[in-house]
Image (cartoon, rainbow, N blue to C red; front, side, top):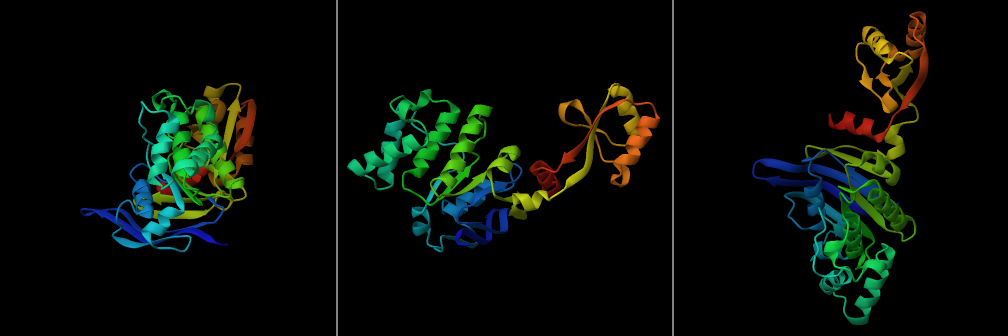
Length: 300
């Protein structure tokens, strides 16, 4: 498949500390690529280097086959960290100012601004001051600004950070629509692992500036379930004590159920033991492996 973004050996150092080191990743055309990592793992620094906003100490970045910084930027729209706007200016006026920086003027700019406002669902609020926008609306206005130059690759740094569930869904649906309907390749960093699992086709997981895992979400999750199970009983306290005695470690699972990993993965023997001890079980639920499990394993 064609490659939209290719990074090889990327490194950036601040004094003696490497924020990013030996970073290799490939984003294929059409991907919605999730860039994951704990706070301080180097995600934003790496994205700044990809855009040429800061100089990389080592390595190369190629966007649609070009390593030239100016050429790379022409094909990319981006939001890095929180999008900032002039609060006293309307959403449309902020975009007019941004359009001038991209070289858009006159009727060409007007058409582009109308197009991106409609695309992110903000036409009805375009004349309102940006300071009156909710955080979710500001994120969508930021995406509109990133779309002004008709990019083929979109880089979004934590676009759902701080949003309520409605805002998170709006941004997720917008990103998926931009990929499916507009043909954009999207590279998105996020801490919302459940959202990334729903939104992204491929992910890379960063730890201490190095890529520790990369691949299709389905491949990273695997086909089966983990060795963990969630149990519930009429007397949950008694069940908890019995599980501690049998398994040793018990954590809280979903819906208040008790999560355990049976010795040797044999849940049948554990259930037999519990039933023999007089426990009335209400639920025995296998825990499906999710992106959070992968993330914790890789970044632990």
